[in-house]
Image 1 (cartoon, rainbow, N blue to C red):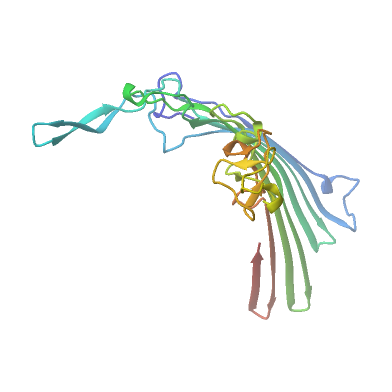
Image 2: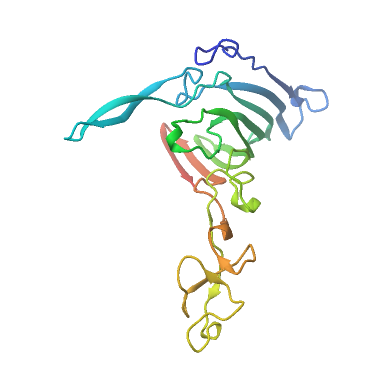
Length: 290
């Protein structure tokens, strides 16, 4: 593949793929089998280059509108131009590599199943590297191909077809599972691995961990929190207030005590059910998904 989005030397990418399949039901040991009507194994592995339309021509230096300056005693504002993000002549393709293994089967000419297991890795994802750059320098860091995410799971479809004279009907169940994890991401240094986005799913929710309520016995006669009781950096606590775990052990609950909560807002498991029938030209079907 080739693209004008990249600088000379990076315009072209080679993304090979290979797939193979074996229909076992055609072999002598399964041919004319009364149970197995059809059985196929297949596998594929390949790569694909992706161009993110949001980040085009990153190898070119650009200027854009800026606030400019103020002139005269009337504080008249004059617009201006400013250099945007620095160019990255090494900007190149986002790369996806996918391994897929599947099986297709039909039993008794009525029950069919398709199952696929996949493992996909995307690398070279565009991101701005983390660095402390003073605003007065006017320096904007360029986008780099440094992000990496893995996604793996399976898809399964099970269908039963049958008929009674002119009455034909089917029942289908589907299930999918997919879980992603950030492998590489430019982030500011953190005191604990649980505070990074790296190592967790995209959009992983993190927050303080509830462990109960402050009790009257946690305070002295003057309402001051007793020595050794965890306090909070967010508010002056009182009896009855929510109490959160001090995960870093410094007796103060703050932003460094956040931990992963459950899942993100994209479901990992999706279930579906589809059923219908046909009778003398009349069709009916229904579909439910969760």
